[in-house]
Image 1 (cartoon, rainbow over the protein chains, first blue to last red):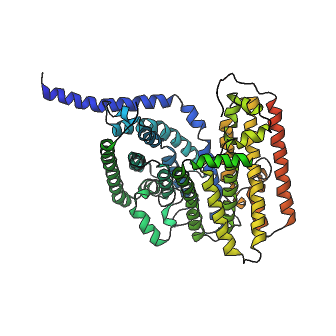
Image 2 (cartoon, one colour):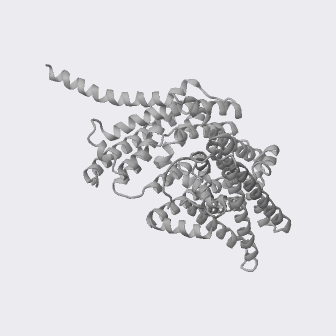
Image 3 (cartoon, chains in turn orange, blue):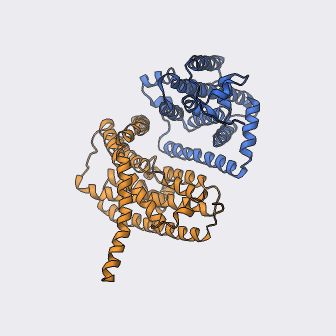
Length: 276
Length: 260
């Protein structure tokens, strides 16, 4: 037996099992495609309210605000909502696994817990992202029409930035969920982080509308790289901005991914589960 | 009702840290929207005829009434489940008003955060707008309007859940109605089109929940107060009628259980 070949196979097998988890989760979700689509009523509703709000704001003042006209503002919000609404609530399960001690039964499984949850995330996210994107496109075209100066050639780079934003969001949630190893109650962290994405992350409005000093602060924080950066690239693509901001996005992703593995390793060592 | 409030409060206090964290977390959660409106009003002076403080009054009324509704009548969101699972049996056997008994038997912890946020926000607005001389009228009106709004909110949700007696699982619609009511309550009515505004004063009574009260707080009038109290009475009567009418169609469950 050629052991180097066997090792190679085992390594491939390692990745393959996560791929299988991903595929199974995706298949499970695709069964509920129509359910997801009808569940998107909230997305349509909240975008309708935003449309009313911003139409009123633009009608009362100038045609553009911080470089955004009504059409680009609505498309910007469509993208931030797609990113936020496509996030599966896997962090809640992770948090509960730790708090309720179920993690003790998951530690000895032949997979890495974090990578396994990443595979679950991708499987779940795939369906949600697809359905939300369809809904978002319909909303954008119906509410404000085509985005002017949009170049389809930039689409792969925009999608790459959106996907990195979603993954970054997942790993930040993962880090917060893993605090359950040390803290009894961590629900408030999820709320606070969500609201930081709402505000400093530019989910509810582009950070270009913020006062200058706050823009400077927000541009350095990771929250803007979850929603603001991909959404701004989607509506006002600029290659120089992409080359400047995409590496920072990937850098933040690497930091939080590494942090989640470190937190898990530390937490699993310190784990003390009672009962049987 | 008072006994239920005391009992639910004692139950929450068993887990004090969790209670405080959830209350503070929810208050902080809501305060993110102050930031949103502050930034918007940095860029424009008025939105739909409202200034920054006017929108904060809407937020305060909505948060206080939503908090009150889910502290006192926390079980309203579970009504469909109780109807479909045949779990109203234990309430039917007790010598108390069934609807009140069902609604009050549970309280939502995070609703305390909504209440705290609403009251604190109102306190800040009241102090910044009024001298200590006429502040009592302002506070009095706020208390009455918040109580009425909590009762209207609960009544509307009760009516929607009551449809489960006839049409099966209506919880998804009830959740959507809850989202509609909260979302419409925190935006100025001036941004909505005429036909939508007429809907907000009839089918979804947001007008009586926050818009009329907000106007009445700015310019106190007996007419507005009477209108809100009258609408509150009408929605409560409708909720009672709908629930007891639907209760006639209730089918008891055969689930065996112990209720302490």
